[in-house]
Length: 194
Image (cartoon, rainbow, N blue to C red; front, side, top):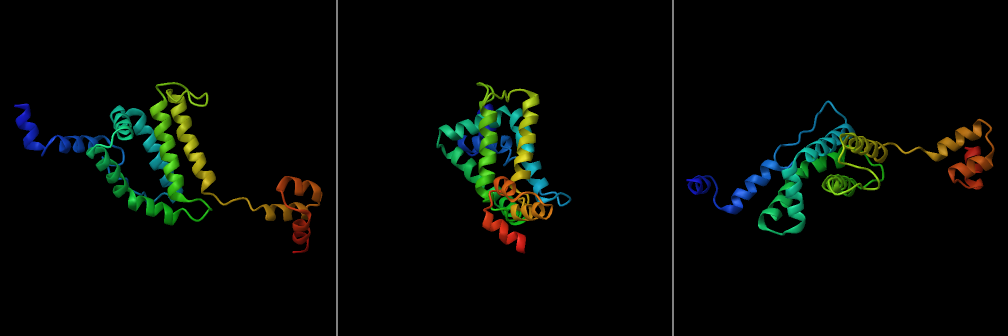
């Protein structure tokens, strides 16, 4: 009876596995929507903290990720390509709307996601850099750090020359400004004239 039900619902075992993966994969089991009420940076934080939250709780997705790393089965290749296809619009949105901060968005996004994956997959083995990510407290720490990294990566950089000029106008010694900002005395002299 079970065989009959399986073969009526799925074409073959690979089809069954594909459906199982789609149902349990964070990127494939739901459409990730951009909330127009949020800024692009807030949307990115939401997507990645949602990933942390779900992956922590979803042991099946954890096993699927490990499987994909260890096997080039047709289903794992399907899953990897399907994730890429599903996320093209999401990547384009963030790449176009986060602004140009001298950060390559796609590579940065990939590194953040892979770091999340690794730390969560590693959490039951041991600490990582002395942090025990198996605790609820450190899950929250991970989510906060993801948000902090996004803030730092996609924020206006402090303009060193503007700060140096303000310090010069306040009468702060040039040697101190040069030491703190890394600007040369010649650069400070030019700022003093501007």
